[in-house]
Image 1 (cartoon, rainbow over the protein chains, first blue to last red):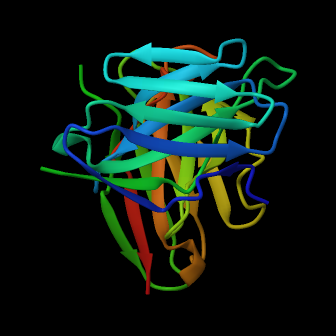
Image 2: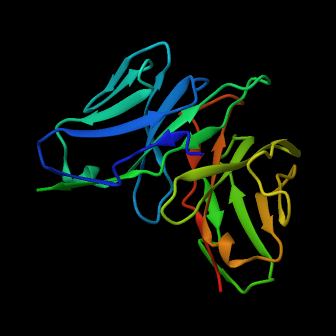
Amino acid sequence: DQQVKQNSPSLSVQEGRISILNCDYTNSMFDYFLWYKKYPAEGPTFLISISSIKDKNEDGRFTVFLNKSAKHLSLHIVPSQPGDSAVYFCAASAHRNSGYSTLTFGKGTMLLVSP
Amino acid sequence: NAGVMQNPRHLVRRRGQEARLRCSPMKGHSHVYWYRQLPEEGLKFMVYLQKENIIDESGMPKERFSAEFPKEGPSILRIQQVVRGDSAAYFCASSPIRDSYNEQFFGPGTRLTVL
């Protein structure tokens, strides 16, 4: 049962345009959401996160939006650059009783930004 | 400050052999997480360890898999009697504090191929 879903395996965007990557989740206990970026042969790198008490978080060219009622979040990259070409993973976390949590990842979306 | 280190980067084993994957966390980090990424899948949580303690192994298969994080030395993920289905990329992440999200730093991964 996939609790975090990224339904688009790939996305192609022209340089300078906006990239929108989507993510849906099913577990209502998730209270923290993260986006990771991954280049081939490297580990994931943290990009941006959002707590469930917010609906938007912005960091430079990257903005994450959270719609709790729809259990949906999205990552906007504007303007997109060729160096943004990578696989983007959406991840979610739910605090456990003992105070820690682990990450549940989606399958990823491969973003290709062409010059 | 060196990042999370994993070795070997690539490991080839025949069915029935043992695989040992090593993870050296970032300096000052005492929390280690192991994730597995099967082909065409997202990363899946396996186990969370602190020094000398397994905190959560709910994502780890009950048989053939074990993990440790000794007082001295790297964290080890051990897979006994490997099968073809164990072929995957294994990532470890480390963090300096117990309940962190964006502060989970990932290593480059070990790609295990079982022949």
